[in-house]
Length: 70
Image (cartoon, rainbow, N blue to C red; front, top):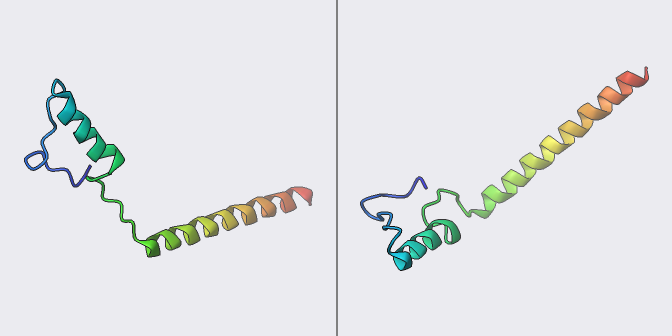
């Protein structure tokens, strides 16, 4: 909620159920206050990083197995 501004979008009173439900919808469903970018280039970069980490873990695991066999 780093984009949330209490002056601009104050959290409504929980007794006002309609406004409170709208606030929750904006916050969690629409992710209006989130800083996450939906940029596709970042997604592919993240995917590449995950693949690289996975490959590195696999190589380390194989290296340990090879050393244990010796």
